[in-house]
Image (tube, rainbow, N blue to C red; front, side, top):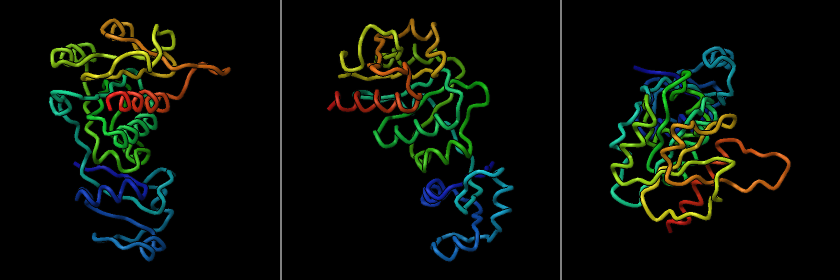
Length: 228
């Protein structure tokens, strides 16, 4: 199985990991960059058609399909950090969160399969190569997955604007599963009921919410800092 990805960072990391099957570049790029892979020269208009007009930066690659991990691959015995996405539907948000998780050293991401959310070219481009390194698991039932994480010693931290605690007022010296909800609906009631802590970010301006990927970054780095 294969799929197309585009963008220099995403393709360069795929090349490092030996996942590129075919590499298509425009002539200008082929003259500026050295590739340890056979290059197929294409016109920019051809790459535009292949990517449906996306910002491909003159490079497109056919790669081995991104594979999801099993839940057991993300679990650690101690000091673990897993990010769970509940209701995130936007591929750009998913890609941005994957990039943040790689930078922060998060053990993996779990999301619920729905509305076609998956590991596609848009996610790979926005993740800027991080999709090659972050373990991502897709599950059909988040509530059951949370129960399994609890059985493995994880504490569950939900995020909500009306939570009783600010993000820096609770302990994180344990295995942590952080749940990020959608910007509009937040996390579901069923998932919220399973949380050990509910936390929020301070909002002092006129807008009362952040982009999901931005909020995730703040929560994640606070947890990392607290664990240190």
